[in-house]
Image (tube, rainbow, N blue to C red; front, side):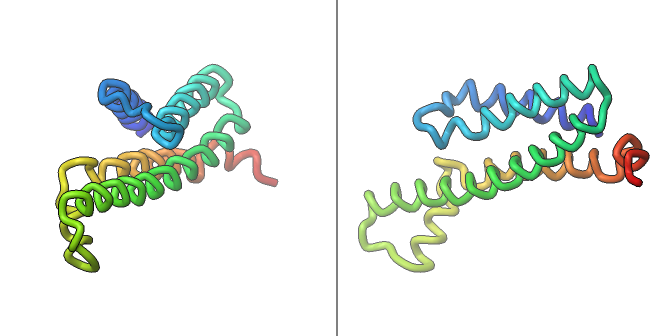
Length: 134
């Protein structure tokens, strides 16, 4: 499970860098989360301690929140773009046009949610954290 998480984080980081997902501060959020996640995973591989696992658990919640926010921002950007070309769109017509757009990909940030959930599953009842309980 950890290997899948590491590969997913590396692939997502590479894709975001290649796509130049760095135009504004909000676009840096997934890159910062992924970089921090890599550092925490590295720390955990060296120390193997509970502190790094607890930090990883909190960071994975950040992945989930960041991914959900990303879906919102991608939708918002797509809706704004659709309104520029078709100003009469509104309501459900705008919604369906926005979610059907190819750019920005509405569900792409869902990858961050998936990675966060995978990390949470990895830390759930982890033996090191379980033995630390009183």
